[in-house]
Length: 262
Image 1 (cartoon, rainbow, N blue to C red):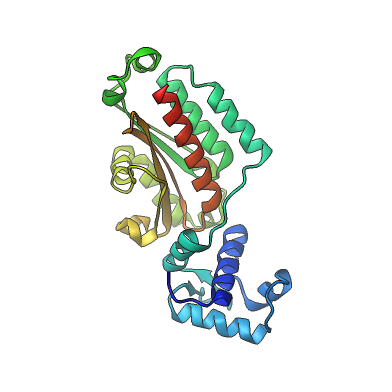
Image 2: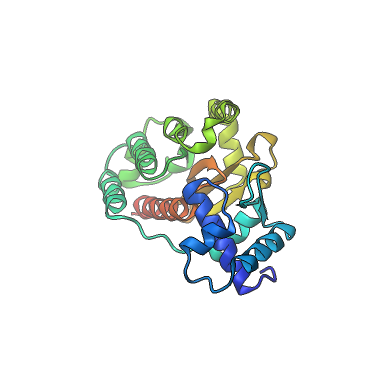
């Protein structure tokens, strides 16, 4: 972990969380007004904000004195500061509804998975299954896979994501639409940045593609007898609600693990 002081970690957490929630750069006055647990002056906060910027965790748009996280800042937030997400009653009900639909054919299950993810998050969701591996299963699951293609790629959620503030910029709309049109290429990208066992978050430049520098990808694989047979991925702006998205993907991927192993 980087050698940040406890105060710097607290301020970085506040700036990142506030920016994710509001899409507005965060200044010292905002921190003072909305966080009573910060026991220092506005001048001290400004100094710490400047230090965090110098260290590469924050930056500021040229039109604002407030700060926003850099890729490095988001990475530190996700790895060290992000708090566990507690699903709302509505979200739990949607996940339970998905769980109750797992006796359908594979195509219907994946469509319901997309529908659930899109009902919970505001981002594009992609689900990919390796049906060749799934066809090697036995029992009821094998019957549900019968007749499907070797691989299936399911994609949804662009329309809802366009309501995010980042897409007030027409260039962002064009970039994202172009990405999502190339489904196979996008599937290969997510293949390359998916961990075999855990939720993986890739931020901006970590994706090593110029057209993805303003976006993040969150993925998790699901398994049959410990063998990966598909994944769920979410694509959205770097100002993503990471805690909600990672928790939801983890919950649903684990549910599919249980289903395929039964």
